[in-house]
Every structure is written in C-alpha cells, then in structure tokens.
Length: 303
Image 1 (tube, rainbow, N blue to C red):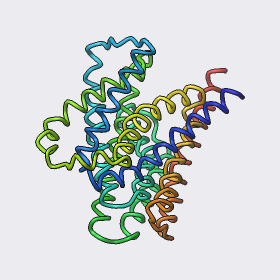
Image 2 (image 1 turned 180 degrees about the horizontal axis):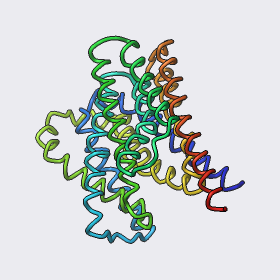
Image 3 (image 1 turned 90 degrees about the vertical axis):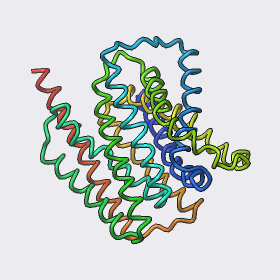
Image 4 (image 1 turned 60 degrees about the vertical axis):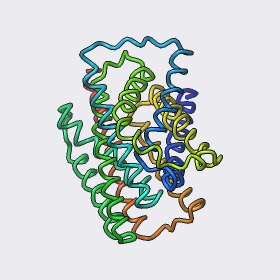
C-alpha cells in the first residue's frame, strides 16, 4: 500500500509538471522560436542528466546493436515530436496542446499492434476512434482560424511521433538505465538540431534571455520537465503496474487546461470539453482493456 501511494504521488507530480510545461512553452515561444527553444531545453537537460548519471554512478555502456533504436527514439521523439509540440502550442493554445497530445496512449495501441504485434482488440479500436473524433472536434470546431488549425495538425503529429517513440522504447533491453538511454537520446537530439539552430541564434535578442521569466522558464523545461519529471514518471511506473499508471497521464491535460485558463486567460468552450471527454473515454478504454488482458494473462499462467 505504501509503494502504491508513493508511486501514485510520483506519477501525479510528473504529469502535473508536463501539464504546466504547455503554459511555459506558450510564454517562451513569444521570445524564442520553437526549434531554438527545443535546442536550449535539451542543452540544459543534457547537463542535468549527465550530473544525475555521474552522481548515481550509472553504467554508460550501450551495446552497438541498440544504438540504431536509440537514434530512432531521439529523432522521432526528441526532435520531431517535441518541435511539432512546441510549434503547435505556439500556433494554438496551451490547453489545446495539453489535450491533443494526451491522445498519445491511444495512438500507442496502433503502433504496438503494428510493431510489437500486440493484439488489437475491439475496445482498443473503439478507443482510438473516440480519441480521433475528440481531436477532430477540438481542432475542427473550437476556435476556427488558420493558426489554430495548423497548430492542431502540428500537435497531432507530436502525439503520433511520441506514441511511436514510446513503443520503440520497448525494444530497448530493460536492464539499461533509463537515465543513460535518455542522456544518449538527448545528446543525439542536440547534435541533430545544432546545425539548424546555430545560424539563427544571432536573431534572438539576448536581452530577453536575461529576463527572469524567460531563463526561469528554460530551467523549468530543461531540468524539471525534461529531466526530473521523466525520472519521477519512470520510478512511479516501477512501483505500480503500467496499466494502472496510465490513468495518471490525465493530470497533464487537466493541469495544462487550468493553468492556460488561470495564467494565460484562455477560454474553455463547450466543444473543447466535448472533445476532451471523448479523448478521456478513449484512453480509459485502453487502460481498462490492458488491465483485463493482464488479469487473463495472470490467470492463464496460474493454471
């Protein structure tokens, strides 16, 4: 029981941090373009992860045959997904960013079926359909303008690529430290993004970076949102089953929406809530189906 409570607390904190991330990104992209923001975020995160890795005396060795997967994880998840996520948040709203990217668990069902050959059940198919309809309602009806539409499309790409990356992570041996894998993936992302960012850096007004709100936001993204939250989330999942832990993912859109309303003055419309409820139902179906499969699996094993 104690582990369950502590694990739940870790997951709530991690997911809430990610919910607040959308508001921080919305503020920062007004000063720093998305690609440059991702680069700065990863540079800070890389320093933090290396320090954490050295303090905890991690084993940094990775088998050569697994580097290909880590490179794919870095490019798909750390580069494409995060850049489209922050671009989408810039073009739309913090609440739309939090809600649409929360479809990730449902999209994972499709990729798990295609890549890992996991069984695609009727409940999983219905859940993906509900989540997709929810996204269409939010993007297609709520606040119809070109910027919001483009932002919504960008956020859908972010959700899809993050889901794909999450499934690819399952191909990494479990005996590798998540700190080490994350550090290498972050390093690769920095290397990939750097050539595109360096020529644009002079265009950023360095006086803006001295603003406490801006550098405070960068530290939040790099240290708290990218390093600490990731470690809390993984630790929490170790203490709970993955299917039970998934429900805590929804603290992210709840916190993102509430902070967007409280801090940025974003409105919460009826169509937004309708779409959000459909997405919530879709992902809850995924979690429930996973729990039932685990129960049947355990029963079969006991027989």
